[in-house]
Amino acid sequence: MESPGLGLLAKNLARLGVGKITMIDFDKVEAANLSRQDFNYSDIGKYKVDAIREAIGQINRSVHFTGVRKKLQDLSEQEEKAIFCSASLIIFGTDSFAAQSYGNILALRYDIPAIWAGWYAHSRTAELFFQIPSVTPACFRCATSSRYKANEKKEVQVSSQSNTILHSQLLDTLIGFITLGIIHRSHSKDRFESARFYTSLQKNGVIDRNFFQFKAHPDGGNRLFDAAFENSSANTPVFQSFWQSVEPELKLTGYDYDCPDCMGKLLEMIPKDSEYIIKNKLNKDLN
Picture 1 (cartoon, rainbow, N blue to C red):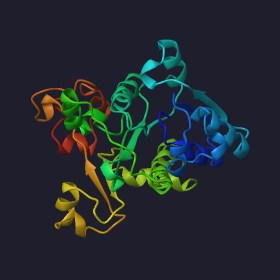
Picture 2: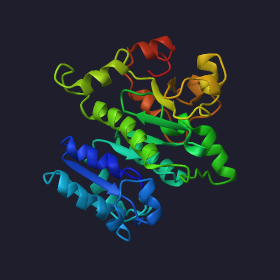
Picture 3: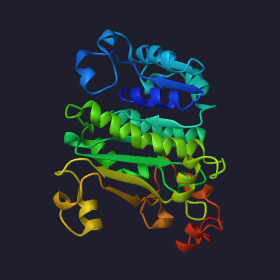
Picture 4: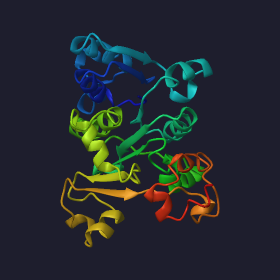
């Protein structure tokens, strides 16, 4: 996990029996964090990863928790390999675009499923994107290419000042459902409801709707909600989500460039006989 705000999720995953959790965060707990994140007054001044380690130790002592007091981008090559070579999933809940974008490179480099999640300005609408090698055809950069272009002119920043602990709990819960689905994807859906959740997202082995926005405020929503519900975002019901398909941004899919991060890697991992490849007439181009 790479996030200043995923402490509650880490604790809940520990409750659910996830045996190994690594969290990367260089920050310390401040008084201002108490209303937005799952920390106590006694945690102020501690590194966040240390406070979370202590809390998880009181929840499930069998969990192997590792806290790394660094920025994701500052990991040495040795540290990076030690963490990600054996990882089953990476979760990015940070509002740092530099960390989000570097996370995409790591997920692609090590062929690891990954989740990105966060709130838009004013915390009225949240977003969640996930990618899974051999299952989803597009990467995080393909999904948020306009953000990358904007960042070339000015660093993309989203303030968390409007967040409350309720926002953190809500988003962590949404991430948690996707997390369990990915972790249990190879298990029987008759044994794990989370495995059934995952398989329900698939269509012939492929998930192409892997990016959704969640409206948590009457004034939330965006143009995607407008198009989906044929009315103004303000009239779209609160707590409604909108799932969208993400197309790999490649020359063979109609773009004038190939995504600099994935270069079509995820698309090439999709089975050639899948309905997604055939429907989009990509089976010949990928041979």
